[in-house]
Amino acid sequence: MEKLLHTLIFGVGLFVSIATIGQPVLTAADLNIVLGDNFYTYRCNYMSEGPAGPNQTWDLSLLTAQSGALTTAVNVASSGYSFIMGNANIAVGVPQNYSFYLESDSAHQYYGNGIGSAGLYYYDPEDLLHLPITYNDTFIDTYKAYYYASLFQEHKQGTVTVTADGYGTLKTPAGTFTNVLRVHQVETEIDSIYPPGWYWSSLTLNTDIYLWYLKDNHNPIASVGTFPNSGGTVGQRAYYLGNPTAVNESSQLLRSFSIYPNPATDKVMLVVDLNAKQHMEVRVYNTLGSLVKTINSSDGLANKNNCYLDVAGLPEGIYFAQLLLNNNVAAEQKFILEK
Image (tube, rainbow, N blue to C red; front, side, top):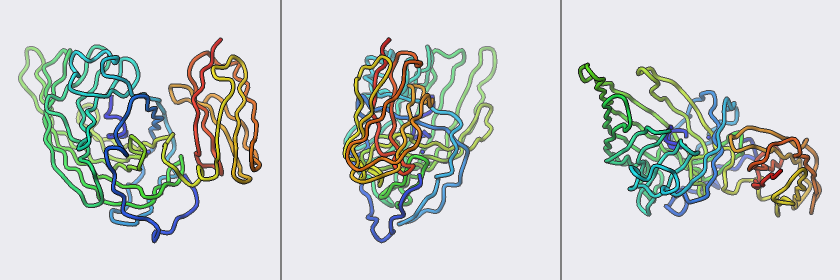
């Protein structure tokens, strides 16, 4: 599994004058992953990362989702991989496919992943962020890892250089966000493989990623970069976070968003309380990140608006209702469907 949104592991709204953007300083309280976090991640076409520097406006609003996934933060003990990932304190992913991190007040560290019965364990973890972090902060870290339950003996070691190279406003399909900090991450690593009956072989891999961080979001809200593919080839990918939790312009227009009943069986009522008349739309996603229902766009009135959604045709499970105001994500609610 990829390193979640750190290896993204990415709106169009009102323009905010760059004169109003302050230099963000992000702390562990702003960024650390916590139990129960849910992340919708969309893999997209590649776009250029744009310029570095202060008071930038990066426009990734034309990213087109090619696939999506929902991941959840759980205890390492409940992940099924605590036998090897005991040094980590949080796991993010889905059953049989988790990434592992150690969150602290001073750093965000990567400990590897587990996929089925195999995986990658960092016995010298990779530092992804040193906290707090602000514009022009930089550091270099080394890391070492090995693949467990592999048919081959495989090891990797590398160096990562992390630099906060810009801040400003970011636009993604999920919204327009201000006071965003961009982090440039460059990895150079050597993967060594020893197939039975053969000699050691080594492959040098380079990764170059740009990630955008926003206060009160526990993963980057966007990422673009170049990644090594199987066989040493290089690919370009971009990602964005479909459910950013920090306040954007649209959420300022909303008083509350609730769902009744919850759990539900065949119908739910969505109650949207607005500060003023706004264009609104509701999209419903399953736990795989797939769009399964849409309430057609309409003009919501000031105060309470009641919308009814027929979910009788959906299988039982967990779903997420995403509210868009003026085409930007304003809020989301989880609901359970029982048959």
